[in-house]
Length: 390
Image (cartoon, rainbow, N blue to C red; front, side, top):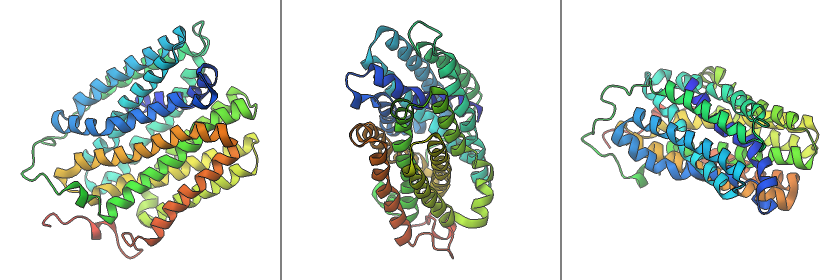
């Protein structure tokens, strides 16, 4: 949990200041969100090779090497700001995203360290580290803003320190005994696995969670700070509140899932997203940004945790690395598209147009959830889990 908080601090820092830096630094306004978009592209492009490395070497060495990459990326970001190299800052964002792919794998490491009945609690506890990252990243950004003569260059040096402490903590992780021994069977073809209703719902749930959330969150700092004229402190508070709202429901998620089931949690996430969009469309006052971004975080939690905990019901033990890496590749590819398009929509259509563009995403997943029979109220994921003999 602590390692996750410190490694993911770079994500929360980039969310707050990368777009603001881009408006002053990018060659054209529509490229202001390119650095943070490339960080998401880095996550998406890293997932498949990371899965192969995890399968071959185990989690601990991969986690350590990727933490070193993150440290180098933070130093590169600082140097690029000092030297005025927008391309270098974009590369640093990409490398931060590449290394963050290992951070996202922490949740699967947590799943493998506990009995299946405790898996929802394990992922919930780990994601509580996101609450810490909500404070660590933005606070480092503000503390380091004027640390050097170039604005925000010192922030990334402080971030390198955060990554270093995270590396030390994660180095104490040990893989479960025999977790990486080859299995006699290579598992089913990926095409067959991806046709499973459970896998489809799990992937689309996480992808929609990240797609809508990233689409709005990427544009929020620019919309608040540059367009609505709100202060950096107000913008920081909204982003921090949003990230806390992403992870705080993890305290009660396992209880809610046990009481109401997957289908109810998925519907709760979709409805929360739609209410969030409705509130944001009312006005661009501080309270509307704050309330809508808090609801955006809660909706993300319900959808993403449901997708993460639903996924293992659709694969066998020997298939887990392949399925997990493909899941993350698809999820973060959707997130990358959302991040890349967010700046363009904001530049072309302003905040209101961006909000209306997010509505079909939420309604599309609601339609999938409505028509799928994988999670009827009278069935559980166990009832439709993969049959190891088929």
